[in-house]
Amino acid sequence: MPLLSHRKGGRSVNRLKKGDKVVMHTCIEANYHKYYGRIWTCKTDQFKAKCGSDVVFLEGFSGYFSTIFLQLVNLEGERHENHCSK
Image (cartoon, rainbow, N blue to C red; front, side, top):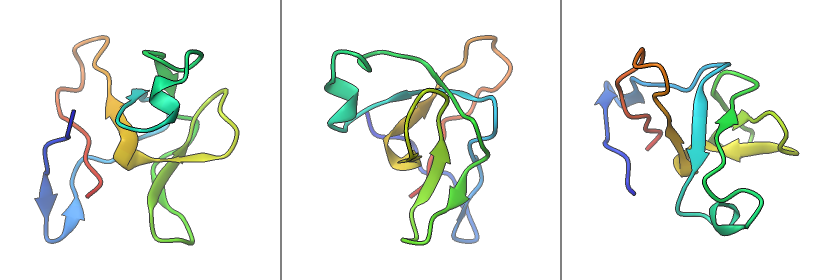
């Protein structure tokens, strides 16, 4: 499911933050049986990796993960925006 683009001045308005809940989508890992539909917790705020990609560390996942393949999950009705990093 593609994410809506919310940009202001060429930068993402909605950035993932530590503690946000996300699911993987449209990537190889999202279809892996251990990860399919799993809700992950962001261990860090979103940041730019040396390669230039927007990434976060996820609790229980080794290494950082590209935010392009993460969808913010609204479990408590507190955050209502879609995340985008394009």
